[in-house]
Image (tube, rainbow, N blue to C red; front, side, top):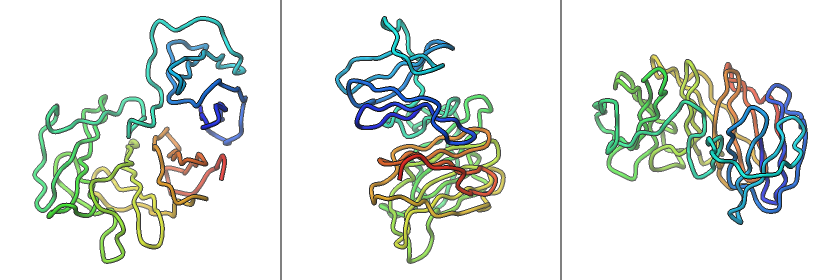
Amino acid sequence: FFGGTDGAIRAIDLTSGKTRWTAQASAKVTMFCTASDDWIVARLADQSSQILSLADGALLDGQPDDCKLVVDDDVIIVTPGLQWQSWDARTLARPELPGVKPHAMLVDMERKAGVAVGQTEPVPGRPVVAGGDGSWTVELSPGADSFASGPPKLVTLTATHVVAAYDLAAGRRLAAFSLDTGERSWDVELKSATTAPPRAITSTESLILVSTPQALRAFHTTDGREAWVVGN
């Protein structure tokens, strides 16, 4: 489900990227949530909510009693089952990462495993991802061409990899690293019609989805090839 700043809502097929249906909300969509197999709720910028049929996007009457979060651009990670753990409220042991200032851990709540994100020291340093057990550490953008500082802001997990967006002087990139070894499996250009940074990242079994202000882009988890794009 993809909500535009103009209130337009689209249900997009994950396999093909084709639009299944469109609907028009009365204001900008700030997040989606659901409490039923038959409908989804769009929370709007004017603090109201609209219920839409999952089948065809038709507006339904009433207000939901409960709402399970699906997507919120104010939350860095939106993939169900994943959760950010700050060191102040962590449930996993903090790994020893020499030369790195840890910021948080992204945890797969089912597997109780995750990756740490942080930055090289002294801060502000270059963005880093590391194995949750501290067995490996990699800089997203090593070298003099690095254009990024601070911990990574867009990170998600697949069954086998951690995927993160980062910036170089030559442009924005998207890279996947093995959860077992930290080896960089693929690294591709993250194209965009605007210089504005991506808003959110999430994953399915076969796709990485990256939301920018003007588009939604899907990449294959296996090799980073772009599967489809909605928008520019």
